[in-house]
Length: 112
Image 1 (cartoon, rainbow, N blue to C red):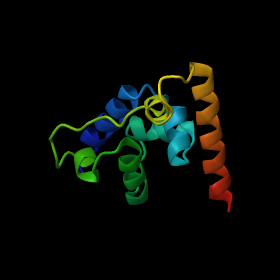
Image 2 (cartoon, rainbow, N blue to C red):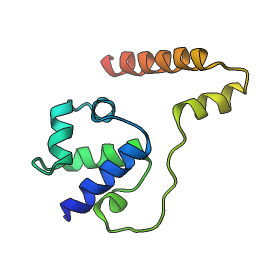
Image 3 (cartoon, rainbow, N blue to C red):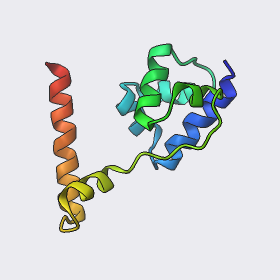
Image 4 (cartoon, rainbow, N blue to C red):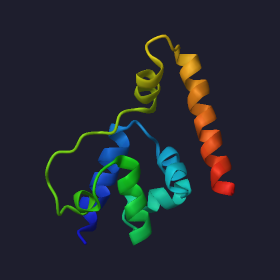
């Protein structure tokens, strides 16, 4: 596996989404130090982690591995998703509250 392509694509996708290593790590259930090791090439990505990374970014594992070179669309941001469902009458504060509640529900469901 061309690790440098994988690393580069993870970093580029993370930065395109304006996520920190901590934020991406949370989405993958990995801590910041693990994310840092992955991004600096001192830790390999497991197959399971590769699949989770692809899911989080909405791309294929082949794209992450450099086997697929076609352009991809960035997944819409969470606020865009909320706005699409709620209309333009949602303030930024309301959106943050909605997103926090969604995260709360997701975490609660993981514990079940």
